[in-house]
Length: 621
Image (tube, rainbow, N blue to C red):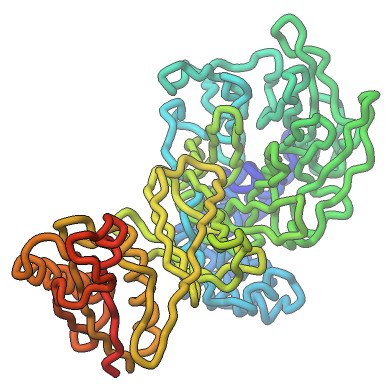
């Protein structure tokens, strides 16, 4: 359902034709009435009779294009372009090739299109970046996509969840007249209840809204009192006649209804509907003040554009406004959906994408350009009608990637933000130009940034993962902070780092005393902090070589103290080496109680003994 989905089509009621031509006139009349299924049969008959030419090939390409039979469409377009065609034919041919993942061949046709229509924005964008595909494929995944079990074997699309009710458009209705565009039943609005287990009840038609024509999709105000929906202009007696061909041409129009006693009543058409153009695919904002919709009304940039209109407090409407050329293109833009955060999602075949319709989004709070949502939401086929319920955190998207329009869940990939603020432990001052690393739970570095003038860096991270933050700055100690699992949203982490207060003389590097526990040689937390300062100084000057002298107190016998101090020297040397300093640059030895700092012998206080249990760092070079 190519343009049927975009709701560009005119609905046609025909009377018996009085005169027909034995070659293309029958097919042309069917094509003109958008009865593409029957038109294809007639054009194929012309082809079988050997009466084909580039016109017939193009018409077949167009029919299959509108039915989104990409393989057949590309086949006939290939024959048509053997002779010169209009620019749009080359563009459509390129779209069908892209839909078949034949990107190199599609680029050939896009180059011809760009030559024929150099000022068309689609051509301008293509010429700027003809090799866009790798970057598009490598985009971070924003949604997880899964097909729903409420789909039928017919077209189902345009799903949107209000409270616990899912509304969507479907051609599953087995009764009534079939639609000549795709030989399916006319669309109706259906609803299905969201059950506690996450599944949906059997869909039921919303009978008070459905007619013998097309209906859907819908949009409902936050308070549930008003529904906006697409239907046909025949329901409000708005259509044009072509007496010569005995046809009535209708449009797709917007209607609204009010809810009373659990039923939709008081159905009225929108005042800006007109028999000369379509208005469809509504989306009302959370305040119920702005209605977004798609239309080919005068002022449109392309075939179908996205528009908005003010909903006044007295129930009247303002003048529709086009969203402008940052969003709308010379192609088609449709299926707008406005989130509670004022982010607009919409479908486009004019912006750079994978092929067919792709879903894009743009933050209307900013002056940004639309961004392609990327895979797996978008494919080479038609992907459209993305909606999201922020309360339930459930989203839906429609796609014909399986060959038929179906509804898929589109659940946002959980993302979070970690803002790190680096400060000095000495005075709390923020530290700009600090190097901040983020590591995974296996200590693999996954990001490196430098703090700004506020001492800040911000990392976008995935949820349900453990991260570690490390902060470095010249003249400061390195700090490492493990974080709990991120569950979404933003968190702020203050990292305070200690200034390195080291005195370097001609003979030695003087640190704060490195104390050892009584009768032990292992490095204490306090000792590690001081040795990290030594590591930093040595890392900044590769010419430095250090000799470590470790001493004991005067308790115990001389031999035991000598052995204990030697263990302390070796432990100190090994710690520094473990931090990345080459073994050739540091060595050490224990001196026991032979060089007491305070010669108090057996009359030493505990404080004096602690001072004697020390290490010294002499400069060898």
